[in-house]
Length: 420
Image (cartoon, rainbow, N blue to C red; front, top):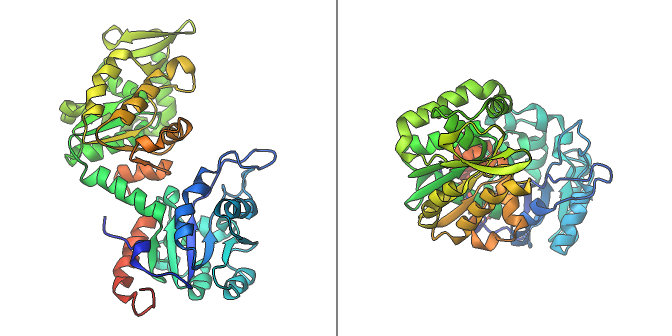
C-alpha cells in the first residue's frame, strides 16, 4: 500500500473542499431518530481541522428500498449541533441546486448535500474502474466547483463508487483525520507490528477471520493466532474435534456457499501454521439452560457452544499481556447472553491491561469498547466493520487506492494549486 496525502500536507483556509464521510447510523424504525451518533462524532476532528475552509459534506444513509433510507437533513442538523456551527442542508446531490449552493458559499460556510445513494451512479457503478468513475455525473458536476477532496469515510473504504473512489484523477485528494488514523493503525497491523504480535479472531464471520489469519500467517507477520467464538469452534472441528451436530449445522448455515472453501482454509492453517495457532482448551456449552465448561477432549458437549472456557482464557492471557502488538476482532461467544459474556469481557480486560499496542477491530468489539467506556485503554478502536476486516485480510480498498493514486498525481502540484 502506497502513501496518501493527509490534512497536514495542505492549507485549506478559504478553499472549497468536498468531504466524503460515512455517517450511516442506526435509526429508530418508526421515528427515524438516531439510536447512535458515534459515526457523526467520529468525523468531528476533520471538520474542526477544516474550520476555515468552505466545506461541502457528502454522505449516505442506508440504501434505496430500506426503511431507514432517508435524506441527510437530520444528519446535517445533528452534526451542526455537535460542531456548534451552522451547516446548511441542500436537498440535492449534484444537480443545479447543489451546484448553485456551492458557487454561492461564503467564507467558512458548510453545506451538507443530500444522500448520495439517491443518485443512480453511486449504486450502479460499483464495478467501474477509476477512469469510468472520473466520467460520472457526480464527479463531472462537482469537481470543477471545488479545490480539493477529503476522504474520511473509512467504514465504506472497501466499496467502489463515484463519491468514494471517483475523484482521484480530478482533484487532489486527502485522507481526513479519521481515515489517516485508520490507515496508519491497520497498515501497521498487516505490515510491521511490534513483536510479539498476537491476533485474536472471533465472531461468526469465520470466512473473513480465516482470510485475515491466512494473510498474516502466510507473510510471517503474526506470531500467535487465537481463534475464539464461532471461529474457534470451526478451527476445533477442522483439527478433528467432534463439536456436535448442532454446532456443525450452525456453522454450515452461517457460512452458506462459503463453507467448503472456509473449511479448506481452516485445515490448511492447521496443516501449515499449527505452531502459530492457540486453539481453545475448553469451551462453554449451554446445557439445560445453564453454562457448562467442558474440556475440548470431552467434546461433543450435547449443547450449543457459546463461549470459551476459563482454561482457554488463562492460556490466552500471557499472549495478550506480554505482546508488543495485539489485534482483536470479534467476540469470544454469544456475549449478548450474560452467562456467555465472560470470555469476551475477559479478553477485553486483558487487552486493556496489555503492555502492547492494542488495535480493536470494528463491529461488535469496537461497540463493546465504547459501551464499557475503555477507549482510553486501547490504542486504536476501528470505526469500520467490513472495511476493517477487508483491509486486515489484504483485500482491495478502492477508496484508499484512489487516495494513493491522487497523491501520485498531485503531490508535486499542490503549490501550483495554491494549497500550500
